[in-house]
Amino acid sequence: MTDFDMLVIGSGPGGQKAAIAAAKLGRRVAVVDRKEMVGGVSLHTGTVPSKTLREAVLYLTGLTQRDLYGQSYRLKEEITVADLTARTQHVVGREVDVVRNQLSRNRVAMFSGTGRFVDDHTVAVTDATDQEQLLTAQHIVIATGTRPARPASVEFDERTIMDSDSVLNMERVPRSMVIVGAGVIGIEYASMFAALGSKVTVVEQREGMLDFCDVEIVEALKYRLRDLAVTFRFGETVAAVERHPRGALTVLESGKKIPADAVMYSAGRQGLTDALDLAKAGLTADRRGRIAVDEYYRTAVPHIYAVGDVIGFPALAATSMEQGRSAAYHACEEPVNPIHHLQPIGIYSIPEISFIGRTEDQLTDEKVPFEVGVSRYRELARGQIVGDGHGMLKLLVSPEDRRLLGVHCFGTGATELIHIGQAVMGCGGTVDYLVDAVFNYPTFAESYKVAALDATNKMREVDHLRD
Image 1: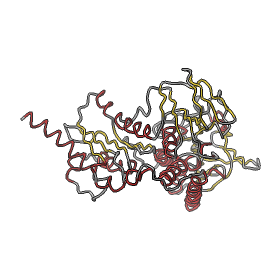
Image 2 (image 1 turned 180 degrees about the horizontal axis):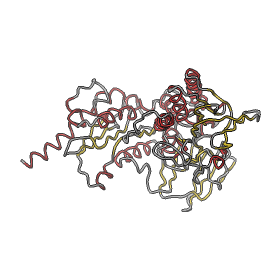
Image 3 (image 1 turned 30 degrees about the vertical axis):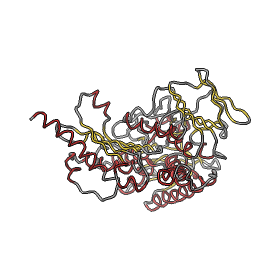
């Protein structure tokens, strides 16, 4: 007889949902995590604090209102780190309470400490006082998440040279900043600090950024960021970062030297598996600390599952939640549909980017014909009301069966707006549904109708030429 039916290591989005799903099915469930990390990396150093920080930046800088009130408009002239973190601490505190309450309400046992495998059914939990307790379980779910990857050649000091975790604890808003890496996290922080007035330089060894996104959308974002005085150094590699009393000097392999108050590395993520003693459970991780799983999120040991960032792409809070739920259902022999292949991607840059489905380049490479329908925020009453004249929504439509092949959005509320396209695509709807639908006015949602009309008008022109 094991202590629990399911033991979850990690209380982030994937771990929470796995534990609660199994508890709802009447299983005895326990979660192991450090007391100060309830809610996981997502809640303490990742998704929640960074997105809260973004809201604080937008509010205090008045950035989104400048088209209406002038380029010098600011809600607060001198924005301090305390101004920014007050909101973050409030939200994180509330969210920790929500997670604790949900686990408690579903009678999930919570063990404070770190877990490591003793064998494939036993986990040793070490608490803050180094006391150890052995827990056994029929099924185990690994949901330990990731930490920022740190190049060994760089001397991080958490003040001048930071990663995406320690940047949340910086003492003051830097006047200038170098961000190494133009991935999602790097671009999100670049846009936040640029909005605060920092002179930001982004260094990326690849020739471009966000290459999984629509090219036109990425170009629009680059234009907006350059407008905020962001400098991009693509195709450049950092040779060294020198720390000095008044800041840091970033030396590139091309010989360029970039002085700045602070440097932030955003060089990927590393799975938090080092301390798990995976070998004792018959498991291994790759060089990035990631664990391989099958379509049911089972590891090489069938009764041990892994979910969330620790298994790699797409490493999003939203997908991690679904992975946790699916793993729990499978472990409990409960029917579960596979996660839908249509998953929205949201990037919380300033402005936001969100998309679902395929890009123009992907469709072209696959020789799939498509028509484009575009709606620009400046043509919508809602865009004028909120002061966003730069946003856009783009629909990619099949001229053969009129279904949506992709939806790409840039601007205010993009990460919310994308779900209308997701619902239509997921239900097999056509562009004609959007043409005929009535949307509230004035809203950004109305952009779907405008873009749908644009696409159908273009398709009609083709049909008329053939008649």
